[in-house]
Image (cartoon, rainbow, N blue to C red; front, side, top):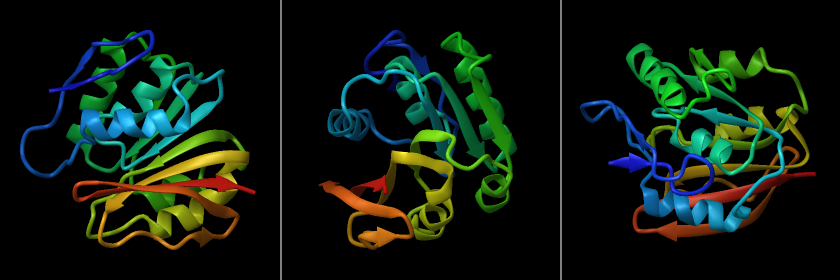
Length: 179
């Protein structure tokens, strides 16, 4: 079961896709990420790449982010994400972009996002998405990359500098800050 951990939608259950195609971030790892970022936010837009269920973006909205853009390539999973946003009462605050991450990033406004999540398939790794993401973050904005703990991304990617890195079992979390 995936649920919202804290904030205005605390305890709300989120639907997850059937099968092995999606790897939702566990509640434990998601909780740890938000402990590292700070428990609550004062507005700002969040970008969730490879969004899956939307749990990361929805958690950020529950904790005070203003709006979310979620990018998901798989049509059924994107529809499930829309339903999860509706379940939380945030259909008007969540934009679901169905498509591949590189094409979606090319259409987004520079400097718009205070926070971004990058959670690609482990085999793909987050490096390419992080490299393209830098200009979309506002100065001081943060990007959180989930990855295979054995293959962390580099410490500096364009305007992004590594601020923290943690390991939770086989899952690695790298937090970057934009210059």
